[in-house]
Image (cartoon, rainbow, N blue to C red; front, side, top):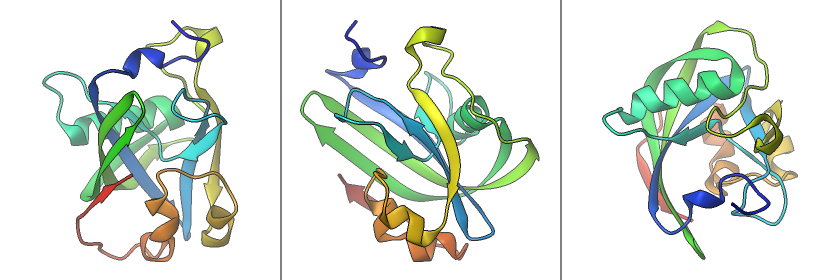
Length: 159
């Protein structure tokens, strides 16, 4: 394995499910150090979809693992395809509602404690999103609409 955890996600299509959690006009993001970028960046909590697991169930599980929050799925709002060098991910982004739990930075159970990609967790308002390394970039592009909490149409975006 390379110096960064997650290097084994290369060379194949990886389905991912992510949660868009908004509270008081702010979006919850986790900071990760992933091999897909040269530097750490902020991203909605999420991760791989397991065999015979629905995307919505994967989003709920991943959000809980990474944030300590139990969420309900409101609706699918983005389908994103990330293709960059040796990585290819098909990602499903769900608007979520917090049902229970306390926010705390979790961990990725597939990685050992010394090889975690997760580094931090924080809430971001629309102006703060513009100044950070946030991916996917459509989060910044649609930040005002997203943070309003309004019902959004389903969009496909290619990164």
